[in-house]
Image (cartoon, rainbow, N blue to C red; front, side):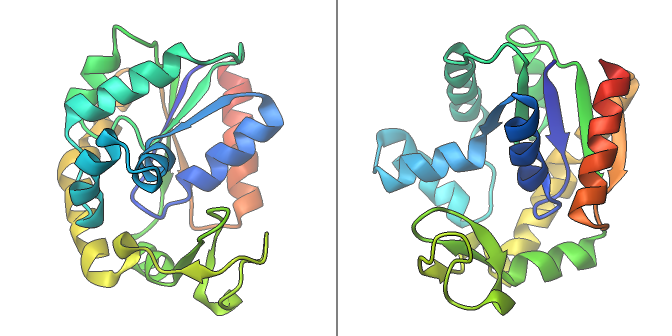
Length: 206
């Protein structure tokens, strides 16, 4: 089963996808993680993507589709994959139709005010990439590494990211709803409750 995760930046797509991949043997494809790895290694793809990511803008469709298609060809899991952060617009969704079947789309809904609060207080570990709140201090709770605020988690960039999401990504909700494969979950609740709802929906759809 191949599942697309939808939702605004900070809705919890990555958190839920990582947990689901670990517990249910899915392969997890996160375009954000892949791009950050490319940036860290100063690859040509990373350099091309850098100017877009730091401004909170979408990386051009051609770059993203080629990257995801390459990653899909490397998959070893037979349980399917979780697409986290892809597709981000209708053009990407349609471009992937002939490359990978989408069995289900999970939309994690969180109000915009809560999103701004979450992202502006989010900190990322320089060593392991773990995400945590600024209230948790300057040391990573997972590995003890130094944490920092990513450029795309600063308030002015967050607002731009939300504008981009509303204009380009939000139409995907109707796109998958029209296909009859959309499931919506309230992402403002406890992480465990959100996860339980997602697992229940997947089992019902399997």
